[in-house]
Length: 523
Image (cartoon, rainbow, N blue to C red):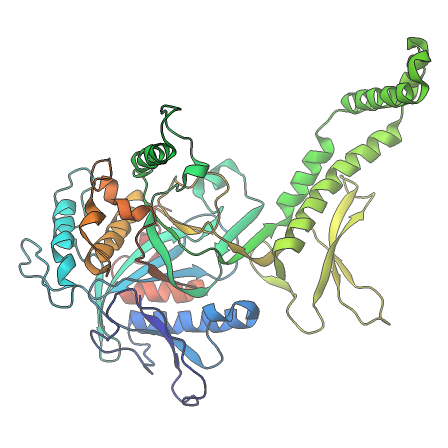
């Protein structure tokens, strides 16, 4: 994508340098007209630009530490058309709320390449890198011949056409997905929720994603069988080949940078459940036996070998009837859950606000006079686990302390970073991953991935014959090539924004095709 910030119409001219995104394609000159200064609300692309710009300006105020990903006061996002098949990936997420399902959108904007023959799609060289044309055409043909994963009827250019005098012509493909890890119909059916729901924070992430195997790196994957006396370089090569064969079944788009901002929603109701579970984990009998063993070991260490069994037994009735010690032990177990949660937030995240379960803001920690000082674990004999967690606000020295207890209705929203973001098919991800863009259907993900692969085949400026070499395994397994294991520098841009449900419905309606209810009927 080539998306960049431009001054809104009527704004001051040339007062600050414009924020220009890195072009995905090697060519830096616009293939057609850009959207500079366009203020269009007549077409889907104009609406999208309006919604995304507003979101990135709001995020710039909420997260001033990551300004390079946001828009400043009077800037607006600009979608610039460069080269055919250069993809502009735009994620659109509903503002606020914690609801299961796939009610977010991924829109892929691009300029279709010309075709020599529409009956048998043959790519025209105009606007494309001639050195890549043969590989790109071979990939188009391979997808058309696939009888297992049959491509959509409009392959190689899926989507709908959007044209207007201001925004020019675009092809737009739309896919339902979830941009917040933990939102899945499976979890809703089980009646379970994640304690931490994570999502990439709204932002403009240029050249941050690349095609890659789902699981990368020999360090995190089991090594294949091999001779222990093989040379180290042979061992590493054998391991890499095995990873290629195993992981090629689920290629993804994954983050290529070290870390990007992530917004997390911490469901306090789930935190309280975890603390209660720790409080109730052991029976009184098990706890008392533990006290007895500890007391016995302590007395023996103090008295030495002269202590006999009779001396030990006298401590048993006392340990077994010490209800106060049992209650204190249970409380410490619950407190340890709250302390671990507090330590994680203080080390890695910044608290933004409190919401209720519906996403309505109840506390804004960025507002003047409402800044959060820290979280505090407190004792509470009225609570089932005899402890809890509260917010402590910054107050002038002469003012009394101001606190707010976190309850089961609270959702604590924070900002941190993640290095595990990516675009994934449903059912693929594994434990520990976060901020994943998970597609509703495997067919949608397959279509999206094929669009990304075709874009890379057609536009990669470093493409050469070794990109398609076998490297000890079959060529192009499930859309992957040897260079997809880290050697290729081709990157995709991604813009993520938040807007209202009404705006999302308006955008879907303006694009035509299925209405909102039909689009998400299977969610």
